[in-house]
Each structure stands twice: as structure tokens, then as C-alpha cells.
Image 1 (cartoon, rainbow, N blue to C red):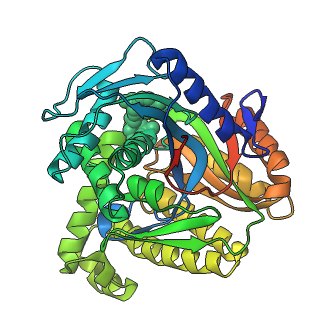
Image 2: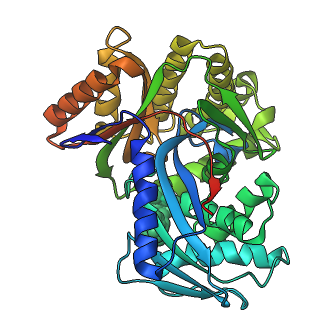
Length: 405
Ligand code: ADP
Ligand code: MG
């Protein structure tokens, strides 16, 4: 069970996951009057390093966290999917599984429709009808990607319905398309890939150019990952995101290269006179962050957590000073963790996600995670007056289907 003290969630074991599944099961019985045949789960994620370079042919290094979407389900012998989500009581969804899915109400079911449409495009259509209950413990609005988790969970359920397994990369791409076409979010590949490819005690190195995912073992498994939500979301995030993308495109054009993977710091220095100082800084972030992310993956595999910590620190500074996507609250949270230092159990800390608010990610010694979270929370509250939401997790595995029969 989670031991909840104020906004500090301290996880001791897998009980939270077990409880999530039993609630979904109970709710299914209550809703449909029979036991579910299947239980599927898909995790949410946090990115350890590799920020704002997914759209620059770079790498990302996320891990799956112990916060999941679970779906309890059974076939119903009809041509419709009857779905209920505990997050949206009173908004059940009925989706035909023999007609072309189209966007509609309730809106949460658009992710479902998008995934079903992906199976239709693979000629795996019509599907058998089913009843399902969706349940989740992914905090809302914290940028942990509940949308990818629901897509991957549903795709995993459909695999169970059909008794097949599709190629994992194609499954992740099918889910990405669902989000792009049915939720209108121009997302990259990270969230769906990590939800599919994650393994326990591994991070996932994703090459955004080749679209390959490689699980990297955490050689040092004594670490916990702390996620700290600043509870801040600045208005400027949308326009600034588009603006940063544009600046990286301009830089690449000036550099005369097809891909950021072909650009070195020496190339950038050479072209420095041809670009504004701001564009130069943005480019320096991209080049150095690509290098840091590769180095971090290697350091993790060798158990060199001090190196990973140093790379996370450099990543934060680069995002703060060169890419300028941090904000006061993220800086306070990160600096609070840095201040605790290695003696206090902190190995590294940085902002994670697009920035201008959202969460930070901190690597800590598992046995000291509790005191680290308490100190981070105290510091942040003192400096900002805001109560943060902080919890710790291990790196968990990807989506799974269990047969309950
Ligand atoms: P996130 O960063 O969590 O992915 P999004 O806005 O991309 O944020 O996705 C959140 C949306 O995903 C919700 O508004 C809802 O439509 C869908 N969703 C997430 N969790 C659930 C759930 N448990 N049940 C139904 N829909 C969900
Ligand atoms: Mg999302």
C-alpha cells in the first residue's frame, strides 16, 4: 500500500499495482455481472534524460513507472465495445467494432477509437465485441502520459481478443497514430514505445531517428526514481514549444545538414558567425543533449550512477540557459535536490518534459528516497508556498496481458 502523508507518496512494494487490478476486477463484476476474462496493464513513464531532442533526430531515455492504466475485460458476443472508466463515472462509451471508428463523445474514448482504427487498417477487422472497465492510478496533469498508457493497454487487450501478438514496434506506432489522428496531438514516439518495450529494472534508449527501442539494464538496481510535480503550468508553454522547434530547424538549415546526428560542436563553432546568439544556444543544447543521452545510457549499463547524475545536472543547466525552457519553480525543485547531494542520497536531478512547469526527475539511493522526498518537499514549499506532489518509483516492465480463466 502507498503510505500517503500529505502529498508525499512513499511506495513500499507492489501492493499499489495489485490493488489497482482488484478494483478494476470488482468494478467489472459490478458493471457487467460476470468475472473478467482478461486483465491488461500498461505503465506511464518519465524521461530520465534527452529533452527537446526527440524532434531533432535525437535519443530519449525514459523508464516505465509504477503508475498504470489497467483494463479488466471479457468478450460479449456482440459487435460493440462497451467501456466504462472509473475516471469518468457517468460517461460510458459504446464503440462499434464492425464500423469505421470516428471521433465522438465521450472524448476519453477517442483514444480507444483511434487504437481500434489501427487494427482496422491492419485488416484485423471486424473485431469481436467486448465489455471493459478502465482504471488508473496515474496522476492527472503531471505529464506522465496516461494517454499513451490507455492506448497501449487497449492495443494489448485487442491482441488478447484476437489471440495474436503484433510486432511490438508496429503496436507502439499504431498507438502513436491513434493519438495523432484521434486526439489531435502531434506526439513523438517516446511514450508509446516505453509503455510497450519497458522491462523491470531497465531504462529504454529510444533512437528517434531509426525508431528503435533498446532496453538498457540498470546495473545498479539500488536506485529509486523520484518524480516531483511542481504543480505549475505556465501559459507560454504552447507557443514557446513551437518557437523552439522552429529555432532548431533554422539552425539545422544554416548548418546545411540533413540531420542533427551529423552535426558536431566543431561544425557549430564554424557556423557561429552565420546565426544569432539565440539560435546558436538552441543548437548547442541539441548537440550536447544528444551526446549526454548516449553517455547516460552507457553509464547506466556500467552502474556509474555518479556519471549519470553529472549528465542530468548538465542537461538541466543546458535546458535552463541554452534552451530556456525551465522556470523558477523547476529550478527551485532541482536545486533543492542538488543541495541534498550524494551524502543525502541524491545522485542526480533535472527538469523533465517540455518545461515551463511540470515535473522534475531525481535519481536517489532507494534506502534514502524517503528522506530525500521529505527534504525536497520542505524546501520547495518554503521557497514557493506551493505543496508539491512527490512520489518514488522503480523502473517497471511494459504492457502485459493476463488470462484470468
Ligand atoms: P497525459 O500527459 O496524462 O498523457 P493527455 O492530455 O495526453 O495527458 O491525456 C489525458 C487523457 O487521456 C484524458 O483526458 C483522457 O481522455 C485519457 N485518459 C487518461 N487516463 C484515463 C482513464 N483512466 N480513463 C479514461 N481515459 C483516460
Ligand atoms: Mg498524453
